[in-house]
Image 1: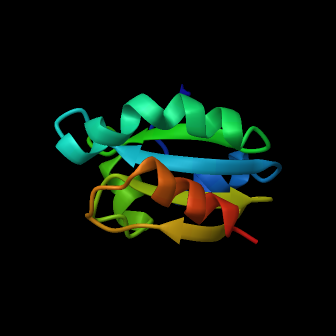
Image 2 (image 1 turned 90 degrees about the vertical axis):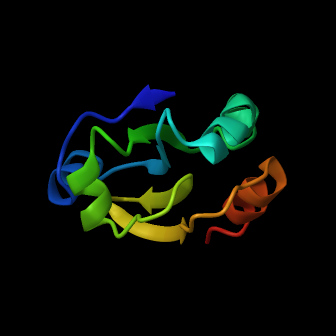
Length: 106
């Protein structure tokens, strides 16, 4: 999974205006993030029509604030440079919950 460079929301939307992206908001110190990380390669393989981008919360704190991501791990889907859906809260997420979320993205 590619790690997103430090940028603003506007810069992200301009740079990623084509394609389908899943932003995975995480941090090394977050136990719930560490819980989901081992299954992320399986989720990426299952949803190969999306490009997954890891957003380190500590390195991209301004971006997280602009995106109103206050809890991690969280997921935001972008299609064609626009936010399509989000699974954002402070709760631990299971592989099944992330898959259900991605299956329901329109």
